[in-house]
Image (cartoon, rainbow, N blue to C red; front, side):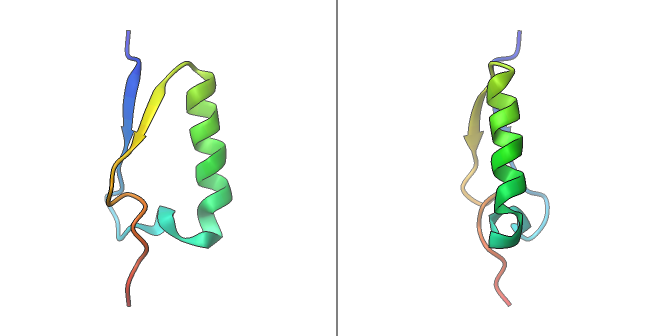
Length: 50
């Protein structure tokens, strides 16, 4: 059974932006409620730089 998952971002790190922080928190909470250990990879939360 899978117990460990990693959160990665295939984009420019949008999930690290303030305007989606609440959605990320909801998703992380739901994954943990399923009994999964979630590891956020370093670049997944990197904010976009313009």
